[in-house]
Length: 179
Image 1 (cartoon, one colour):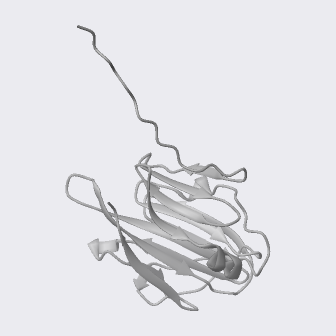
Image 2 (spheres, helix red, strand yellow; image 1 turned 30 degrees about the vertical axis):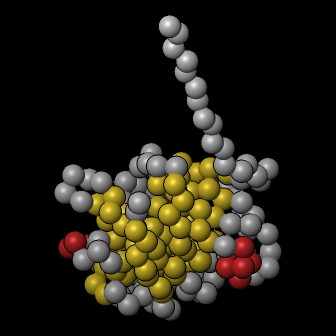
Image 3 (cartoon, rainbow, N blue to C red; image 1 turned 180 degrees about the vertical axis):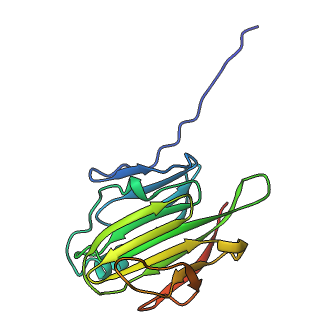
C-alpha cells in the first residue's frame, strides 16, 4: 500500500509594479501599486486604499510605490503620500496582553502646509513631523487611550508633548479589525 501526497497551491495576482514593504513587526506588510495600497496581516488583506482615493491623495499624479521603512516599529507603521509628500497615513497597532494584534487605528493627516521636511520615528509609538515653519508630535496609544494624540505647540524647534486628540489642520482616525 502506497501513500499519495498532494498539494494545493493558491496564488494571488502579481502586479508588475507591486512593491512589498516589510514592517518592523514581520506579521504586517504594506503592499503598494500605482492602483492600490494594501495593509496585510499574516498574508491577509485587512485594509485597502483604492485607486480613486490614491488618485485624490496624489492629485491625479501616479502614486509612489517606494517603502517608508524608517517609519515602522512594532506599534506604528507610516506612509507618506501626496504628490507634494505632504500627507501622512499611519497605522497604530492595538495588542492584547499576549502581544497579539487586535485592531489597527488608521490615521489620515493632511495638514496641507507644505512638503514634509522630515518625519522621525521616536521610540516605538511617536512620530515628529517637520514641515515649513511647523513641527507636530504625533503619539500612538499614549496612556492606553487607543487613539492618536498630537502636540499643541507648533514650533519648529520644539513641537511639545502630545496633549490633545485634535490634530492641527484636522485628521481622521478609524479602527480596522485584525483577522
